[in-house]
Length: 189
Ligand SMILES: Cc1cc2nc3c(=O)[nH]c(=O)nc-3n(C[C@H](O)[C@H](O)[C@H](O)COP(=O)(O)O)c2cc1C
Image (cartoon, rainbow, N blue to C red):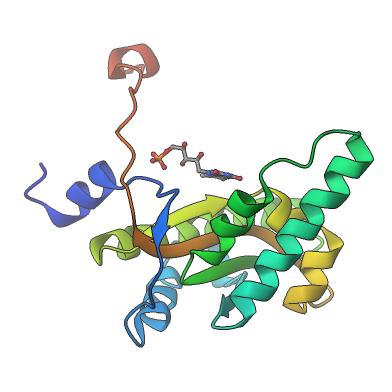
């Protein structure tokens, strides 16, 4: 199976949590975004919008992440934690790609559009993996706060679905154990 490139990438891809600093090859982000836009998409609504944070804006996003951490700690009355490590999570990334969803009223369409945005994010992650670029998927502080929306210049009707931190892998985490197929599959014949 793993002589087939798609299967190989699907099987071997890991979320990368630590990056070596350094720029990505020119044009690679655009190539990955183009591939992401080939994700399956019911009714061809193309709900995804991408915002790429890179260059000097990475340091500004890292500042914002640290500020959000301070605010959260103050609100919860908890220690602020290791701010240098929190900053490095963002600052070591070569780029951060935000996947936004252009939301519509219709609930079913909204759900299907969200699924397409997630598939676009996954496609990007797989293509990145194949090019030895690591991706950390994030749906935490970096995606939930109004201050982040303003930083990104989100427009009315755009919701942040996730952000993908991209960079040169410092370390590839080990694989994790999946439930056996027979436990999660039923056949009707
Ligand atoms: C929808 C979604 C949201 C995620 N959010 C986060 C997150 O906020 N922070 C994080 O560290 N990882 C996040 N991840 C990464 C998962 O934790 C990761 O995929 C999981 O640990 C399995 O590891 P693997 O990707 O190497 O198979 C997210 C993944 C998905 C699919």
